[in-house]
Length: 120
Image (tube, rainbow, N blue to C red; front, side):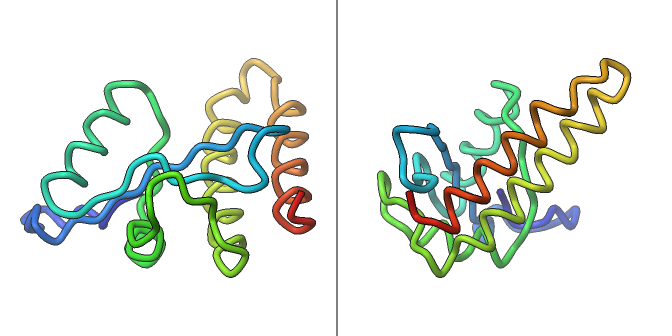
């Protein structure tokens, strides 16, 4: 996630956060990287190089980048994170339309939504 790219956007204003979620291990997604400025830029570069999906949302990046590394997403941010995962899965589904492999992604989304809503 990052501050939207408006062309001449100052790197110092960038915010980024990286999340991971291991079903069965994590109760909620966990912050694995977060930062401002050049750190945010580096997080985005590494994500791009590793093929990790990047979701651009100024508000979400601001909220998530304030969390501590290793911290689970608090319940008041669950809806924000569900929207992020839905957008990322929708993009993945669009890319996989030709392969017909959409059922697994829909099942994963349902599992994430259920886990976040139930807190377990």
